[in-house]
Length: 127
Image (cartoon, one colour):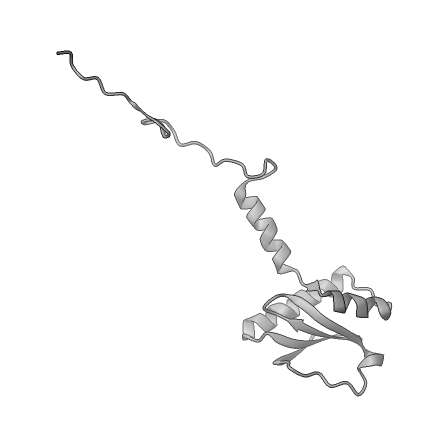
């Protein structure tokens, strides 16, 4: 009988003792980590519901990068306090925001906000 020879290769794993392979790319244009970071950054922003967008358009209100940054900071504060539905006052705008979902539910300008009552909110932030 001939002696048994052991192979240094394992099927599906590669050579025993070979250096670790670099992480594979996901999607071809970036690593998993960079794609995850991109998704996190998307979620860090605050979006507007269709209703809120319509209200802003009806009132010819533009929402620039500065206002977006201030709104994001206000939503961060709301989340830190553990609240969800909140009224955020930015300049001449009153925005009802779901902090948990990071979405503006509705928007009202100062002219339309007179004699308005905001219900089902847990907090208010002046931004």
